[in-house]
Length: 456
Ligand SMILES: Cc1cc2nc3c(=O)[nH]c(=O)nc-3n(C[C@H](O)[C@H](O)[C@H](O)COP(=O)(O)OP(=O)(O)OC[C@H]3O[C@@H](n4cnc5c(N)ncnc54)[C@H](O)[C@@H]3O)c2cc1C
Image 1 (cartoon, helix red, strand yellow):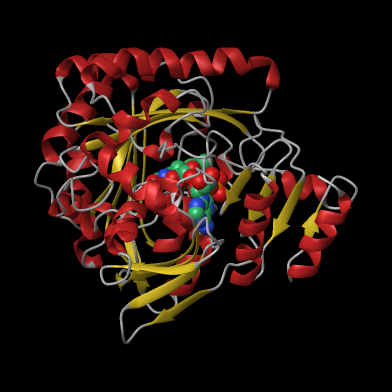
Image 2: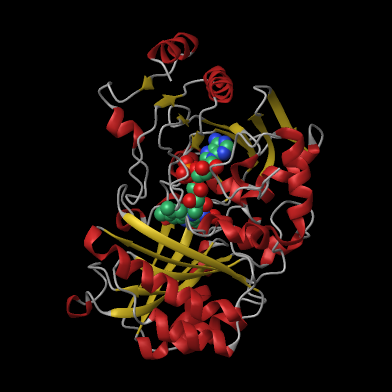
């Protein structure tokens, strides 16, 4: 690729274009997962939809590998490339709220922190994830699992429309009325179909929530998981949260002599009337003695940012995920064996409930196929020291191998690692065939292939 061509790209766009010779190149090429240290030919930090169109046309015509980056959180580092072009949308982060229409429109590079800040001002929210630095784009395209899922459904269930730049450089609307096949596919089909430059969501009243963090001794982990399995089946939809394994961080409400101990934890919230919040937490007090407990009213964005500090940008990480229809006793035994060996404060297993409103939508209604699953399991390890890469990945792999026989064949797209390309069909289950048809219609040459790829 000649420097002339990059000059041509620069002339067409408003955003900055970084190549290896430019100051800021190293910062521009960095993604969240420190395991990926790739050197793109160029990074286009798009500022407007026109920049995205120019970038797509440029990469396609030059035959460059194209990486699309929203929040940069992809576990397999899909937001970067060696030698190709990155279209980085972090320069496009506006969020406009229309309280009258109960909608919010977020640009393709907004994070959940940006989104929640904007909607919280109006006392409104949509389902987002559990870390505020995650991109709205990548998370939504995967389906979107978070604190509010049981009440509002997956993030895609809050999506009304999107603006998409497809491989031919056209700007299209995807909604129930416009390009409905594309709208169906982007709701859970990942980044396969084009660059989403903005998302229009419905918002619902959620301002402050009642939060409970309950830490228990490991010997009660089985009680916690068995309790959660039964209780969540018909718990009111105002409840969100999940059980987890967690090395106790140095939080002020945890006794100092327990910092660093491996415990199990229930992270729960109640988004119903706040004066019912304390009573709503009672089941988690009753189930076992607590090593530590914190209950309080938090602004919803604070809950969404509670884990940010243990997943800073640049930390190395490795992930696995599996959907679970029925959490069996055998599965719980596997969790007890491996969850008790979490090797880092930033290593965990979260068992996210995806019932409630997520089950109001049928498996074929959006590309997200596992509408019958009760839980989305994620096993994640994040660490700083490259010397322990192999060990940390092995913990995740051993844990996953132990739960896999008790889980569905597929898991959540956003929790897949770089070595999970072989699981793409399982992850889309019965929707894979239709997804390949939509892929053929909008991206027949597979320009958008740095993702959990649907081969056209
Ligand atoms: C710390 C952490 C916490 C997480 N928590 C949750 C959670 O609570 N719930 C949940 O559902 N998931 C969660 N995830 C997983 C998350 O869904 C994926 O990592 C997701 O890809 C992140 O989106 P992003 O925009 O930040 O990532 P990026 O790395 O920017 O993008 C990932 C991929 O998404 C696609 N993409 C991104 N932006 C666009 C765009 N504008 N248009 C088209 N395609 C695009 C591309 O294929 C890209 O390769 C978490 C991940 C991390 C690292």
